[in-house]
Amino acid sequence: MQLAVILRILGILLSLFSFTMIPPLIISLVTNDGSIAPFLLAFIIILLTGLAFWLPVKNFKNDLRLRDGFVVVVIFWVGLGIGFDRVGVFLRFGFGGIALSGGPCGVVVALAN
Image (tube, rainbow, N blue to C red; front, side, top):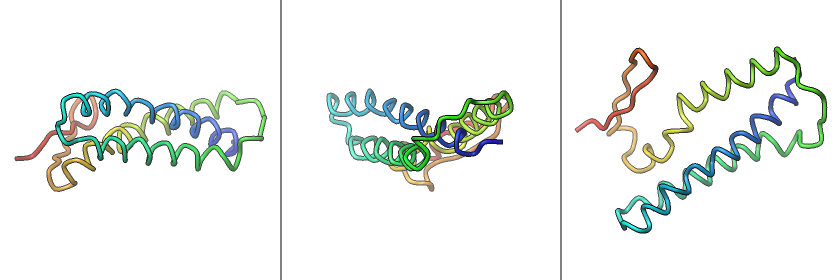
């Protein structure tokens, strides 16, 4: 398994994923709902994490093997499913206001009142 190749691709994917925080940020700016800071922080945290994965191995240019491709897909989907897609929500409401429950399609996040 080529860890450098896996980290390079995961870093690129996380950096690209960070830009999905821009539309909610724009909507928050337009509606003035008070969620600007959490979405901006989520964008920065995810982008910096992606860059931290990518920068040390950016010049490593080996081919991706089939096994490494499976590892990239699994790590990326699990990483998104467990944490990176919820960074903005956690920053806005905190961990105490979030209820995590497992369902047939994975982990479901709901606001606990």
